[in-house]
Length: 324
Image (cartoon, rainbow, N blue to C red):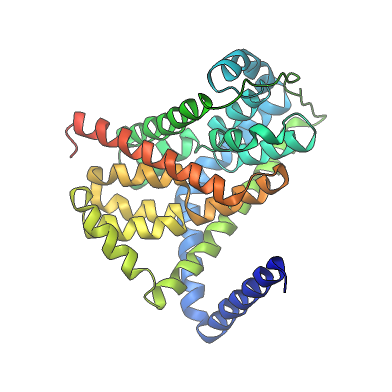
């Protein structure tokens, strides 16, 4: 049996197990699904949907392409990536994951980006959006816009610092054409329609991973991780931080909501989760990046290093601000 066949058999067995559990305990896992939907409805939808519409309009009207042209020289000099990557970074920084990965996949498919720089570009253009961090996480979960700003700065700093260091070991960026100028006959309609699909997809992933996390919890599979992280994160909220971090490795929004219970002390673990993304975000990103030739293991490793850098930046900021 080939390696792909073995993976397919293992995946099929896991899916049948999930299906069997759903049939045996429908009320339990339906309730978990509803918790995910409520979290998406209360924190994700209000902040992301308007932002998705606005960023889509900016893209379709060509403003994003024009703005990214100004970033192109810095992209080539600092990150040693093709100038076209500036467009992807600009969109990712505005919209958040997984939009950056989707745009990167489109550029790669159209021949704007080569495989030799796809991994570094994918890691750099994988960021959370400001509305989610400041609005949903900061103001909504942690009840503090200031905390949201700290998380945003720490998150972006971790991503940029690691990408700058990695660029020192890379070859000089090849030349590339300018970013494509998009247009639309009915920009508003297309932007709203695309935003609805995008935000519903995010909600679907959140609900699915809430169910999967509930299944892991039912069989006590998260307890070892929770205890380990509770011990490691004693200065950052102890048990609450450990349990939230373990949940966040599966679904980041779930984990961040739990970490918020520990207050400002839990910001460094939250910064790690935001940058890493957790299983739910990684699954969405890798779905787009598969066509670029980026290997899943290498991408996850890059995100883990960036997440560690974000943790350290946030730790320094929180210590300076007297939050620890």
